[in-house]
Image 1: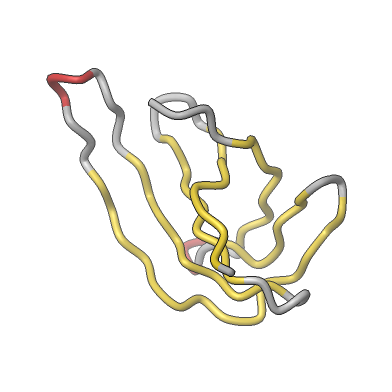
Image 2: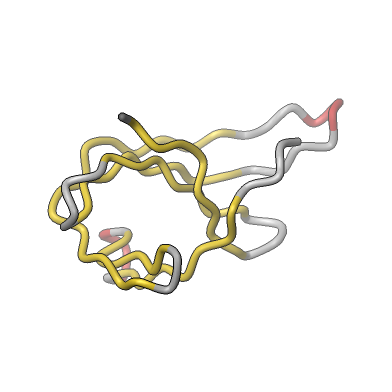
Length: 80
């Protein structure tokens, strides 16, 4: 598995992320573009994850995920 950047994420109950702290800067989520659940490849030892594609207040588009085993949030991808 890649080394992903850990994040601090504030959620609104079952609605998902409402703010993300990235490089020690809090950024409000302005839109949730997509959500999906990934079961991971059990043969490769991957855990289940919840993914979100978000637009943040700095207008960046980022994919983040919550690792159900580690119980932590991580940055998966940033779009240019």
